[in-house]
Length: 288
Image 1 (cartoon, rainbow, N blue to C red):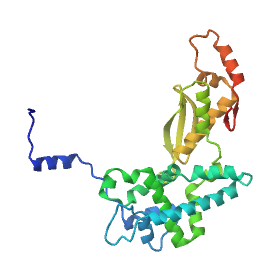
Image 2: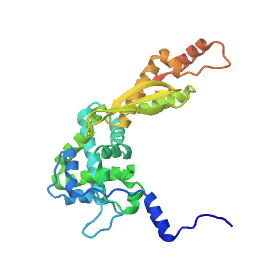
Image 3: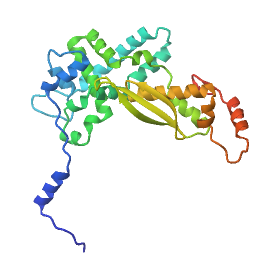
Image 4: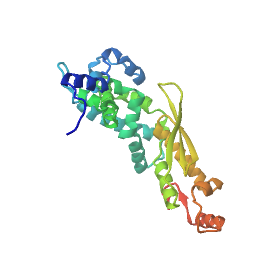
């Protein structure tokens, strides 16, 4: 037999209610101006935007449908627009490289980052269950909603307007994106040399709230080996990894400290460093 405090059903309900964090209700049409300002486009009919912000879990009177059909359309518009922008900005790039660059710009992570920058999460209409489980900040939902918003812009304003919006949202990423993945290259290089995997840390955020600049550092064996800036955390991490790789390619003193671990069994660390440096070749394509 277990002894404890017996609570009435009413008391238990009150106590549970006190300890249950209620998710905030989404903002309505009267606040859509915030989104429109950042998009640089004002809807003639905000019903399009409301639909783009409505998850399939919502079943309310007066709601025609959810965002899934607009998401399907927006996905295609994003792919076409980014293809056009990349062709214009990277005129010497081959088809394979263009495909890699488009994949780097149009994926769940990058689209969700843009959606967070626009603060779309506080506008998404979700069921109470989805709200309580944090659906408004889930990357998959945020990316889908962003595509749906672009689909809504396209339906009302046409392709040229949608393209202008996407170009503003991506900013300099279209010019700076590369078919390479510095983070992957750095991890492969460190793995080949027997060092620990790199650790990325957000150092600070600068600039205005509507256009932040993220500054990240990459650490190896507890030492900062690269620092990067970018409009998203991912972009700043890629730049930090690129800086670390440039040190590695230069085979300078930093490399000897963070790429190579000292050996307990060797009495001649300098000789080991020189031997490994001769065997290791770093290229733009990775470690060979």
